[in-house]
Length: 178
Image 1 (cartoon, rainbow, N blue to C red):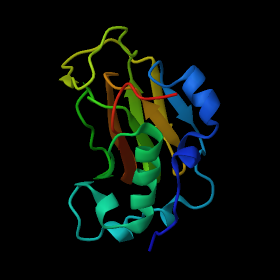
Image 2: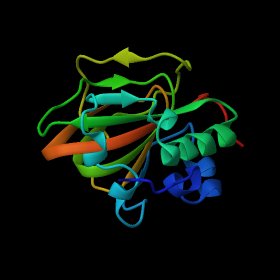
Image 3: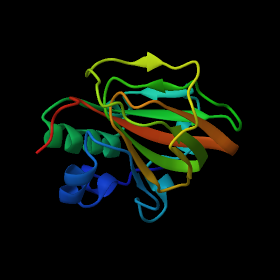
């Protein structure tokens, strides 16, 4: 059973560099950002009997509660952990989220296509995008990889090869930071 505790600093690495170069500005991709076996955080076996998208795991799992708490403390806004268990080959629609999201890939691989972060956006807006040009990022996350997507940034994801499990930390306010 996964009970490894990770923090905001574990997710993004050097905080100073993250806030200076990426936060609320552009995509941040950190291959191998989580060292060791990511299944110690949460595994597919831990998800047995759960729904495909499971929000609020931070309410029932102490290690994920600690992660959400570290994000809440850092941003002075409520944070939540949501997990996505996706069958191989399934792809979501292109969309943007109303809050910043931090993705940690735990099992399997997931392909992410990401378009530029709009210069003008409003916190709290989320949108669907029926058609978009070629993405500016097209990458596959492997277990332990971390991806930060600023609010309002169009993206879509698809599980590759086999079942994929990732967690997303929804980090409260969109305009917090140092």
